Image (tube, rainbow, N blue to C red; front, side, top):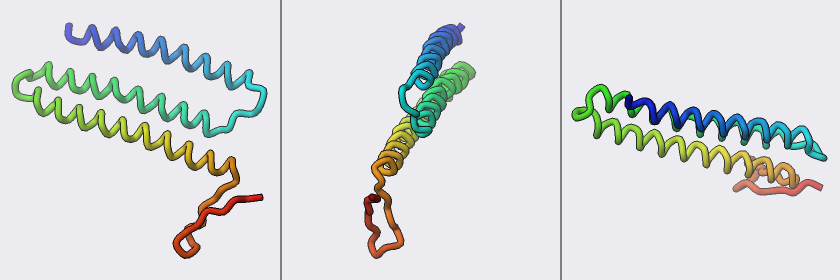
Length: 123
């Protein structure tokens, strides 16, 4: 019975995610200009990482259900660490993909071989 809220949550998540995927695909298809491929990469990576949060919750529920007293604290610590790592990964991937691709669109590149490194603008 402890799985019922988790299953209901997944049903709601899959429904909303399905709507987002359909709307994203329609927006890409109907865009007046070509959408950069990195936009799709950001969307897909964030979708995958956000989906992993549900699996962490499921693992935590299974561990706590099997031995509530003995493993509850360690499961909570493990889950909190996993949530923190997933959150950091999602934000880091988003930031780096945006940073690199927005600089590339502006024609700015980083030359790490120069003394101390420098930024150069194309054009």
